[in-house]
Image: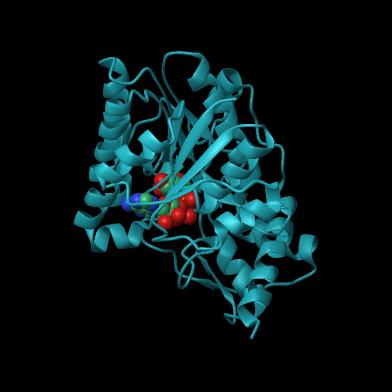
Length: 339
Ligand SMILES: NC(=O)c1ccc[n+]([C@@H]2O[C@H](COP(=O)([O-])OP(=O)(O)OC[C@H]3O[C@@H](n4cnc5c(N)ncnc54)[C@H](O)[C@@H]3O)[C@@H](O)[C@H]2O)c1
């Protein structure tokens, strides 16, 4: 079976992808600098999968460390998750985003090239579409970045497709994620944001736990079925399984492809609040507050390309997303309260 290096493998999407790859018999090597991940993630993964993973603690910007990692663990491909990902922070400190994301990716790609590793799966984002003209969004939609984080994703996408075009890389998958939520069904791994969460689901869970008095719903006057913003929430396990499907193609065929990873169905913020109550029995108080600048009314994927190229589609619904997120969050709350 192939051996795969996961940069940012201790993070939210990386750890769930590691769990799926291990279950499916791949050899997995995790690399992370733990700048945005808990130290106990590898141990939690061991409890989920029964496998003790090789772990390299390194920053992707350290080219010598990347070279040493690839020398110690010759791999067939890299899945490149490691990045800074907070839109607000990227606007406040753009240079650190260029450095971590763009410079880091250049260093990683250079080390891969020198080590003869020429297949990559890359974490991109639906943020590259900016404000879409129409929904569902296909991969052919205009690319309009509206923030520094999105700019770094677009630059990295372009670098990787250039490298395939010039023969420096043999194969690449560019995966544009929509809104990953939920957690592994074991409740042992999940999303663990530092500070106040910027995303809906972790915030919703923290309100349910009593850590915040209510959820702010930003705007109820959008042209959507209930006036709140509509997004394409995708269960993290569906997203992780899509990585395995993309990886299989990248290992088997040369060339590059770009696919949206979403469910194709948009749900509103208020739909999620209702689904959370029905899935967990916890009613979350909310308040309608003014729209946030930069938020779009609706954003959801056309997932046809992923179905055609990868034979993959999302199967888990919003109640499962809420139930799994809550199982994880309630365990985190218990751990945090432990003496
Ligand atoms: N979560 C989302 O909503 C979302 C949506 C679209 C795209 N993405 C992209 O998916 C990828 C993974 O996101 P995530 O939600 O798992 O984020 P995350 O922060 O949980 O995971 C990223 C991991 O990379 C590590 N990391 C960061 N900089 C590093 C560096 N310089 N060297 C080594 N490790 C480093 C962090 O410690 C963390 O464990 C990112 O590239 C992100 O931009 C995420």
